[in-house]
Length: 318
Image 1 (cartoon, helix red, strand yellow):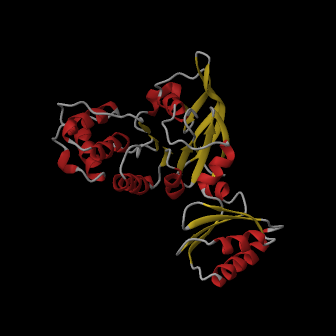
Image 2: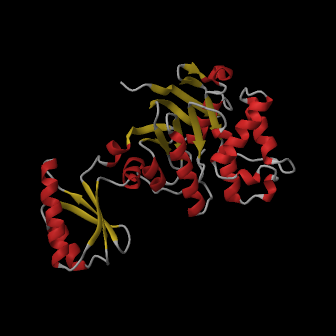
Image 3: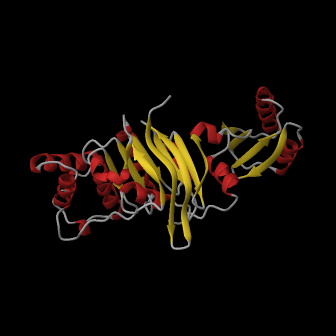
């Protein structure tokens, strides 16, 4: 059995009459990159706030490597947190602020200065050490903010929407940094970007209206239904779509965009998937179409929408 890094048991949080977390229980395995998903108001940021000690749970508890987060001082240096709206004060050099964070994590002065500099090297921004935060671009600020979580050798790291508001290039930089930094750590990664979570995370939990809807490995969630995701070299014509839809092994065809579609299969057993794949290639070939990619299993977005029964809005979580 895998070691459990974070155990959440019957966790509830109410704000007056609003229930933000409703009896949430889940185990996060050690040494995983764990995606935390949910639409607006799902409760992800509230859960992170309780884990960090910013908020007090109404009931239930969170344990990190067996230590209750109510005793947050016992986790100093073992757990780190990047809040959703992490910011730096203007007028104070970045390196001084990061050094202060390191001191708060228990480092003495020389070790804190060294850890802050190493964190800036890790995110590829050693040259901004003596700059003020207001002199940095939004993308740079996000990468510098990651330093707060990367300082020292925390075993469990919570990252609340670290790529929110970034352009594609800077978002990719953040994802690459997170993947490279994981190594033997546990990283809980909250995001509204479903494709991003599917790309980098090996486990995922979907929250909806403060409740756990589904948790598991990425493979378990995305292979939950018989589905093929197909990208073509040119648009799928009506004739080809009609032939696919009419086949007894096909339950339906849904276009994602001009060049991509999903084909839900009507199979009696998994061994029939080979027949369905052969049929797909035969039909496409007859219509002069070439599949650039064919992927098995649901996309995380498809599974997410199936579970939550709504439209993903890309807004901020609460």
